[in-house]
Image (tube, helix red, strand yellow):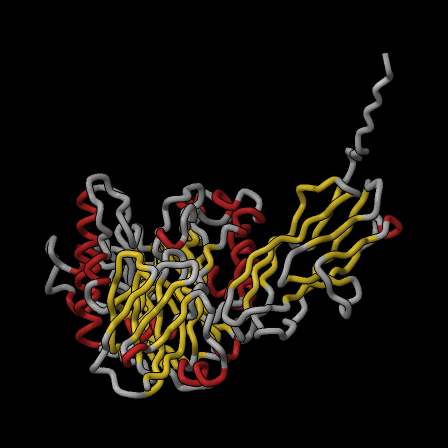
Length: 497
């Protein structure tokens, strides 16, 4: 009988990697232009071989900050020393958002350690990045059941890395803690906080300090605050019954409005930060329905043709509902009355914003037609990375994930300066009608806007490979077409001959 010999790879039990950070958001850039460089300090011990460091395009790594590629080797001789590794992106498409990881190998053995990466080909000078985040009774040791100093430190670390331009926060209790976070983010940031909360309609009320409050942190070097206010607040105290806005919005937790002007373009955005009525009972569902109706009607009446971004903790889905016995979203009325949902569960399968649930996408973005036109397609990210990289995130920091979305600061400028065709659809004009042909994707919805943002056409389809519309009422000129597929939104410029 012959002798069989099995050779097993050597695995060193004592392998250890220390990282200065395990999550990095790389600054946005444009097509074929290297991004600004980020860096991570790596210290490794107990390895039997050189350390192979790998990532995937468009992310690149470097040991010297000059020569970048998708992999590099840290010689065993560097073991036990602090090694500075540089990270950047080199995008091959415009207007995309990217996710990847940096992984480590000891020879052929892949370690569990990793650096989570996000990046984009969206220039910060051409867009504003919004973030919504419910930070779970922030600053209240009694109700968050956490170390509030640790919670503040974790929130600061996360928000610094995200580097968003306008941050809508929910469940802020301690104003001094919010002030410390804002100060830690740097001199460019300012904050505003609502002077009301549930059952508390004045900052002078005895319950104000302990109440959950809505707040914003914003980049005051990029955005100018015009005004802030509670939407529908003027209906109180005249209306207080079970069919009143006061009742619908958790006894006076009004949508918190913030009007901002982009300093570089003078474009104005109206943000509304909401914290919808919680829980899954039928009564709570109906309160969210009533709140959505009141909000949509008020905004359509008072801010027609405005760029409106509604974000926050909706406490429900934009498709379907969390409450048993309901199949339609409580926010459905808005979508039938000049608003569009960005964070539709069908566009983010298997992704939830409530920690521990892949089906609870309850931290959302809903926008007016004009803001939808400014929305950067596919820019929304539900940041699971913060849960994966913050120890015991749900108990120390929050049970909600931050959600990011980006909006062009000047849509006309960006139409002229960038190519916005993604090549998933072909647009042709047989006999002066509009024909859209999908390549690998089917058309679900088409909207057409003029260059000044006016909505000219909107129609939904039952997932068609090809659609054709006469559009006789649209004059010759240049227009922007948004084409929604099953899992993405594509924007193209259309010349009507």
